[in-house]
Amino acid sequence: MSILIKNGTVVNEDGMHKEDVLINDGIIVAVGKNLDAPENCRVVDATGKLVMPGGIDPHTHMQLPFMGEVAVDDFYSGTRAALAGGTTMVCCDYALSMAITTWNDKIRDEMTEVTKPEYGINSFKFFLAYSGMFMVRDEEFYQGMMHCSKIGALARVHAENGSVIAEKAKALLAQGVTGPEGHTQSRPEELEAEATNRACVMASQANCPLYVVHVMSKGAARAISYHRSKGAIIFGEPIAAGLGTDGHHYYDKDWLHAARYVMSPPLSRDKSTPEALMDLLAAGELHLTATDNCTFNCHQKELGRSDFTKIPNGVNGVEDRMAVVWHKGVNAGKIDPMRFVQITSSTAAKIFNLYPRKGRIAVGSDADIVIWNPTDMKIISKNTHHHACDFNIFEGMEVRGFAETTISRGKVVWENNELHVEAGAGKFIPAEPFCPYVFSSVPQRAKMMAPRMVVREHERVAEITMNQEI
Ligand code: URP
Ligand code: ZN
Ligand code: ZN
Ligand code: ZN
Image (cartoon, rainbow, N blue to C red; front, side, top):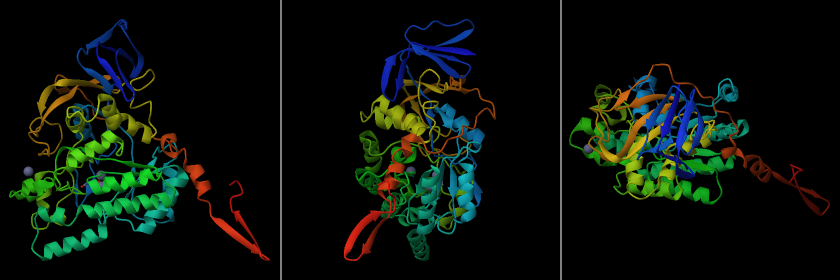
């Protein structure tokens, strides 16, 4: 099946031009001016629209078993929602990232195994929060990152100080603070900033590139920026929730309303944080956007009615991320459409070694494309979203700009407000280790960090390195 997208403006991370795009058999086969339609080719008119690489959401949890429940967006409903919002990979096509929640020799060997091409995993996530559940100790995290560095995998971190959070939560409950406001009070931003700083220091000591998921506060962003200024290889990922709303909801009088926003790290109680995070994305101090999509329904959130530590953590985002980022970024004059492509698609493709197969409109790339309407308005609502969950944290938000048509590997899957998808159509995209975008300087850094030894003989002191190449 061929498709010719005519009269649109093609936007890549490094340029935008009025060009047509020809797709055949799931692949982009031509990009240029005034392309002719081959026989039996469907022509899609994109006059006044932007033709961009489909979004890549590098952080979602479909059907995650978590806190005694299972997230309600499964791989089918979650990826449908993604496509309706212009995201073509988490996803619909998908890659996997593995969580390391404890440390031993067996796990180390399994990590090595799953980075082989047949398994295609090139990143591992460590939690410095969720004490008693997923949390790893510093020495485990450090050893895990040492191993990541050796096998060419990116370490990802959920950075909050889980031990202090557990103590604060106990104290709050003992004082009678049992509602969702206790969630945010038990997790002050300082604890995110401290753990982010610690993770950056440890990654640098382990000579391991680090990806900080869900950067929710200015303090955490500052820590990333500081370590990058010293040359560390660190990527910072704010999420749609943190860019689109804030933590005032935790104090809502309606318990359920407040519980709906419970996620970790919590949404910032500083109202200026969403804009500040967007400014840092614009400045290149933060690098890409995701969602951490992990949705729970009303009856699941109710499990924490008398104890906020039992409210399943997680919110929606995968469907609305592109529109929220466009609205808060491009419409606010903070970023241009090319930076939009970078922070919603191409940087993720680069970091996870999928570029330019994903994240670019170019000959030979997968035909994952969103045709973006930049002029019309849409109101985000649970009544019209495609998630399996019964709430939307962006309810009522008016956004200008949205995905009008989504094409996933050459198939039109979203148009005229309708999905045309088939369960199981998504393809696993293996991600190879030693991504050049992430790892190119790591071997040389290893040489610079090689241990040095001083040999002292007879009064003569000779300094040599254990690595003779230096
Ligand atoms: O609250 C959150 N973020 N839920 C999903 C699990 C995680 O921490 O990423
Ligand atoms: Zn997390
Ligand atoms: Zn509210
Ligand atoms: Zn997550």
